[in-house]
Image (cartoon, rainbow, N blue to C red; front, side, top):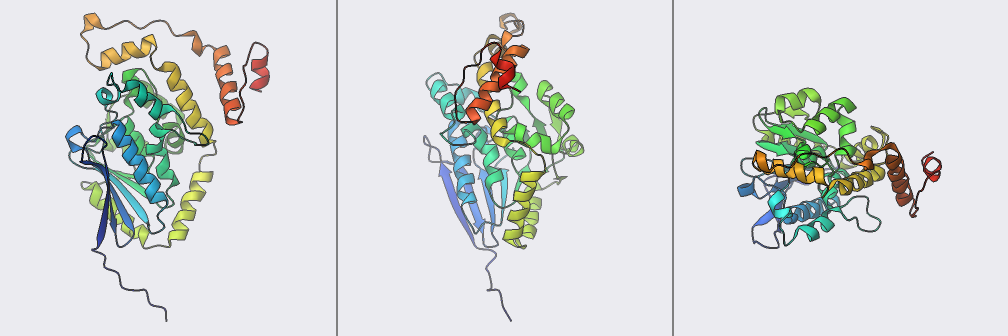
Length: 330
């Protein structure tokens, strides 16, 4: 008779990813003997908001776990009072670093399907084990997109959610277009993104954006992770690959590239800056009015942008003009 070797289920191993400007770890990974890895976002004094070091640390953690054959399940949660409050706007847009940060977040390495901004959501899909996000407090903007990148989400009933990019005059560009179609109808996604409104865990459950509610989501996520970790790691990896490939037929690469292309068209425009001024709390008298919609959103420009994206994905470069537009987009 084959016997499984006895395991010490209390033994853990912790790895940290520190900030380049501080000794405090932005992210830590705790590995338990049963194969469950717990990823902790470690910037509680800022509600785990996303500065450039946090982006790098989350990506590094996801890459490391994807390559670890001993990982059977992953739990992602935030330390302190919140899961993640979204982008640390002041840090990312600091005058001395804004340009470099923008390039690092939005530029895509040759051959990569996603950029750094998208990695923190999308790379959890590349981990060949179930990833469970345990959310509490607030889960806003980029933080919500991180949670959406997980395979399952367990939240407190009072957790506050929002795709709040509309507040800044931009779009969700961290992988939301890949995961939202798998969870909610188009009209629901449209309403949430265009309004940027805040809703709680109860509504998130009704909408299908969280898997279940729990007063102690971290404990419940770990319990579920341990249950799955007791199954064959090959079968759970196969289930994840099967569902990701077939549940919503689409081209992830095209979606992620298009997110970035559209975001670049928005950033720095008059209406985006006007939105940012309002979002930062400028006095009403100093808030610029919105201008008329840009010509970039006319049908002709839309077709041209579509053709450029297709050419980029095919590895070529084309300049679309006039009568070439309809042919390129046919």
